[in-house]
Image (tube, rainbow, N blue to C red; front, side, top):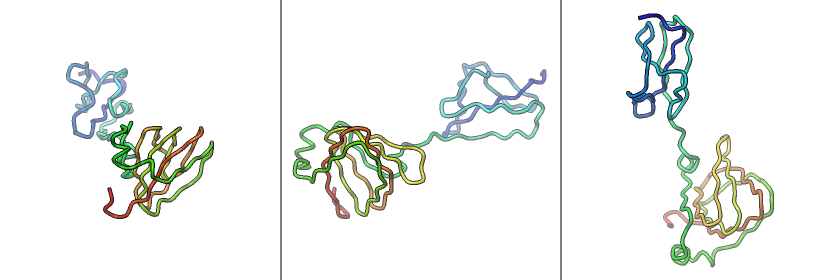
Length: 167
């Protein structure tokens, strides 16, 4: 085999399967690493370019980043229907409104929120990622969760605090 001018490595996905399908063209390097062509980005990550002639190449693994809701145990029901709202008696919950603003908040108990109007961006403490919740969403924030709440428009929500074991 002719030495390649540079070695390309695909990042395998979390299941251990390479990000390059068998139907894609690949080339081999002098140290036996099979690599995709430069223009083939992976599904869950990028393609690493290594220096030519390097024999100590290491396979890198990439995992898709789980959504903020999953990582911080925020439960969400999107576009809740009228029957579900009646079942929970949402109209009896306390009401809270806001204009454009942002502030830090700490949940000392579980809180269930139904977004009536507008949207909120939730950025967990010490995290660059965020989640958006829109009108019609039913959200349950866990106890001891800390985040910055950002409102870019008029916002209205109904909320209730939940004791341990409440659903």
